[in-house]
Length: 209
Image 1 (tube, rainbow, N blue to C red):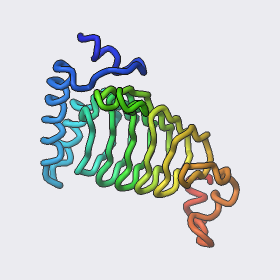
Image 2: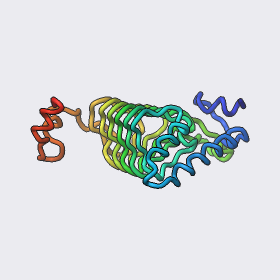
Image 3: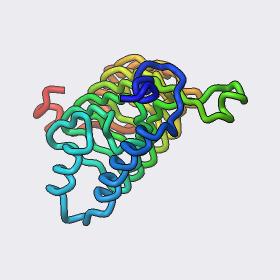
């Protein structure tokens, strides 16, 4: 293993154009290409392919092609029953962790890779990576951008179009640019699902809400 490849997961500066890294990345992207060219009727095939592509992935996960990923999911750790709509982009140069039942809207980007602000180092294409952690049962709205090193707590909702640059705690609604906590998820949300629309009583009884 090359010194450059070692540095992908340490937060150190490294050169992503290293020959060993590039050869390995190309192999991962070949698998990703095959996944994105499956037919809508090939659900079982897609599920099997994801198990080969990802570092870890639980049962019942569904990723709608096209799916974009720097290493085809090699550094992605997904729990079970995760759903991702069109154009999920995982910049997985280092590890991305996602808990069970989390949902991604269309056009979400989760980035682990960054480049120095120093222009001389950036010209030489130096890079660093910081892992991202997304909790259990989160909803990440359409067009959200999640930056390197961010942690999002369980049950949290990130509103559409947000740019998440800092950690967001569990059990909150957060949105904006930069993304900030707007309120805690509370009693109102146990009774209403949108505006003044109430959750049907039969669902509240069924799930003991």
